[in-house]
Image (tube, rainbow, N blue to C red; front, side, top):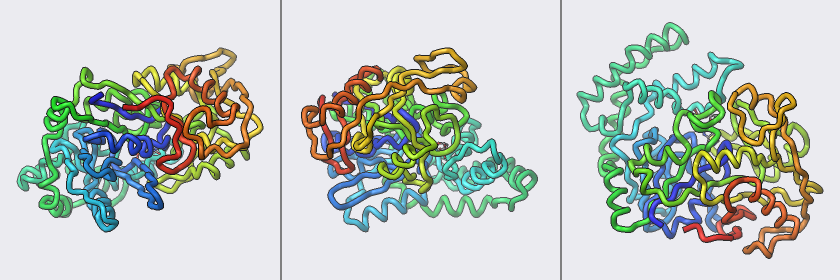
Length: 427
Ligand code: IMP
């Protein structure tokens, strides 16, 4: 089973880090193919907790080659901070490979991300402020800086100068900010070049050769389906392709080589930032999910918006990504509820929608139609097979599976690595 994609089904923070890590010891390469340090994986191993933003979670698995693909935008300061922090904790990070074609988040793009959000006021996206959107915009505008540019000082200076020509006009004339100098940007980027050099590779070639040898490649998406720039709740999305299609463009592995698409879906729903969220709860139930599920952003610390499970979203994710297996995470957070509502469809101005409405306005107006399932009170963290779950938790899993369009192959019953029910083998 050589090439496997892992994607989030909802708005991110589904617990992909744990699922990736579950497979980690059986895969040879773990590839991050989109996004940048806007992501946040929390992986718990024993009594150690690792919060990763930019690095693929495979970095924690000995013998696995972690790869940052061409589709990623890289903040070099964050890259070395994360590598240094892991090294200080005794991990060997020397296997990391970074695509020569990945784009670099320059200082001016971080500044622009923040000032643009402030300028937008009530129309803001609620970005992580890490410069992600402006860097992808530069890539599409063909004024981006790539990793390989750091090894040609003359070209780098030319490209930074070209990019800053317009950006400094915007910074000074529209946002009333100081201009950024070409020298400062170039100097900062060049300061990373020597350390970066041994990691830079033609990662597309390297990964395809690994597949030729029969090795296993895991492609892990940052963010999630509803934050995908094409398939998400646009414009309240991130600026990259966070669905399974993005795994191909962001890594150089063709679609014909992808064998399996695993989607991580939380047993309830969360979202950070602005944008529509039909099953969002503004009551004590929402507060309870936030508290019990510890729903605060890994990257920004922001409290996450919380709501019930939405099977319209799960069905959509199954379709858009071609999901072969779902991993249902954080089922334990739902323990102790009298009734557990599951959204089965939306009501939009009196019309029932079983599928995601195509118009953004309809998604904003969607009222969830709920089916209420009986709750359970037993501690489920010790469950390792479906039969170990209380009957009502089993019913919840069966109902969600039936509604969501793909089989559930694993269930998270606690934060620890081994607190998982495996129903079908994932590799
Ligand atoms: P950006 O990716 O910083 O441009 O932010 C765009 C939107 O995506 C905002 O609503 C962010 O909160 C959201 N977002 C970005 N990365 C993540 C993530 O890893 N988890 C959840 N939401 C995210």
